[in-house]
Image 1: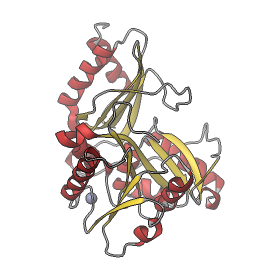
Image 2: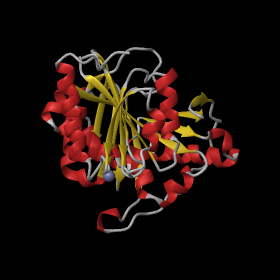
Image 3: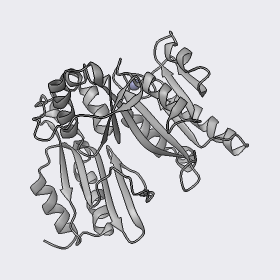
Length: 317
Ligand SMILES: [Zn+2]
């Protein structure tokens, strides 16, 4: 396992609702999977350190106890990550960190805090947000819990857990709904942490999600996917994104795009109004990301208006 191509430590944020099975999945990945050898940070809100006991022996472990890492415990998370970065500078072998958040955490403030901290941004690349979704209860949580939707919207990868226990029709609806909430996340299935195939859900209707309440939530959150033609260049795209975030930052939850450039495939991301510096994606020929497309997740956007504003920024309209 290696760190980021630029030498930074890769940080994977693992989230998911309470009971989503993320600890089981993580344990399996640490033993057999792509996360073997990672330093694990487990965030415990409660005093009973269940996850910690389960993970002991399988990983180099830090426990962040007594406060959720996305809110009350955020300062302590930043301090812990700075300490790990310092230890690496002094010779500790550390290429990858996995942060297992509490089930109540919204990954967005965590990702933003790391990117906004000059010391952490220098040492750590938030390389992936993985969110576990329970095949039995995930659909209810998406419908009834804004936090459940926030977690899914932020994910680069959604792992559907307990696939064997779900009714097939419900599983397909869950998959279609996840795809509607976050069109760009890679989807995979798991049973007891081992990968399993997911059923085809083409043509299955997603569950209509409820409209939020409150002044800024008058409209439902939706994902809009723009395909970029050959005539949109990188400069126009980044200018347009900056303008969009300045004008409509409160309505944007997430932007993710993959654009082909002469330097390779570039990943462009914004979480809320923080834009991450673009990343060149490895050319592994095995990537789920769609090229030359941008997804905007937020409120009050239509495909037509977004496409029009992008084309006007590119000088095409
Ligand atoms: Zn929190």
